[in-house]
Image 1 (cartoon, rainbow, N blue to C red):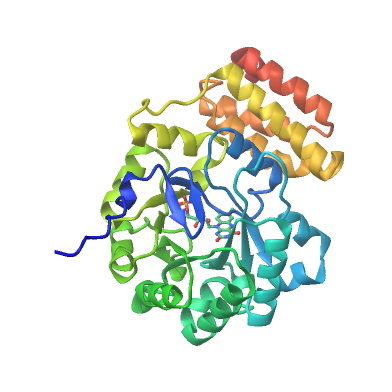
Image 2: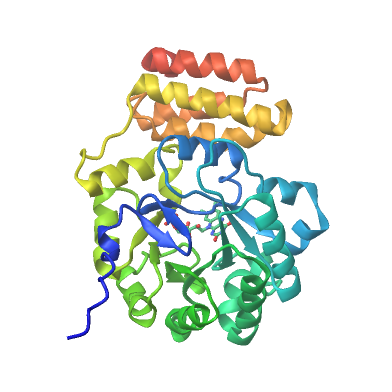
Length: 347
Ligand SMILES: Cc1cc2nc3c(=O)[nH]c(=O)nc-3n(C[C@H](O)[C@H](O)[C@H](O)COP(=O)(O)O)c2cc1C
């Protein structure tokens, strides 16, 4: 009998997910979220152990023209072990230029957004609108893959609507064009964020492709992560809204999946340190005024996600009060006071 080639280790034996020449060192990815996943947030999540945190979507045509606020979305920096830049666009040439720029900016992975449901995005024939036009989708994917030496990945939904759930066909086409991993949010565009994510439907994509597959939608803890992986057969989960106010979530879920530790939320002192660090980073990145404005939504989420003050009403009152403060120093002082004496101050 001729010597048999040594079998590659099964994917599930790897400590993470291999995407082209990149080994993502874990199976719980943090989703690209516009208005959330800026550099300060990505750094914080990465520092807390998230193996993969994507940028906000970066409009490729505006990126290529150097529009400052768009270039800022693609910002990379120290403290990011893995850089994932997500591009959105309708034009193959602009997407190719976006991919070249993303590589030059330091991207390890370049993700294409074929899932965004927002009217301004689909109205411009971008995001999930591309699931309705597979020819154009193919042209865009081909142009991006040809323009960069970095692995290109694709994020999509189940389809445009119930009547056109074509994620398996798009995934198959993407694989043939050289895409190296696929993420599927288990909703259609028509659902926006309504209803529940259909993880079992993502299994049809699993059956259509050999590539690493990431399942997304409504994963918020270890239990939902396990259920999503089991239902879809995916290699990894991607978490979005669950990280609001909980930037440690990817690492906590990963530890629970590995059986290393039960799922654990950090205690008060650690949370306070993280919120104050995040505020300081935001002020550094955007400057004082804009830094505080952008940070307010993270501040609100941090207070909502904290287990104190004990009553939800008191938390809401504290959140409203702290989000009205105009000076960063006032926010720092009020946060510290809230954390130290939550019940008295919220009263
Ligand atoms: C505020 C917000 C912004 C988002 N921005 C993006 C984006 O820029 N690119 C993208 O591919 N998806 C974006 N998404 C979709 C998420 O990446 C994710 O697919 C979706 O929220 C479902 O996951 P979840 O249920 O864990 O939140 C966004 C979602 C939210 C809530």
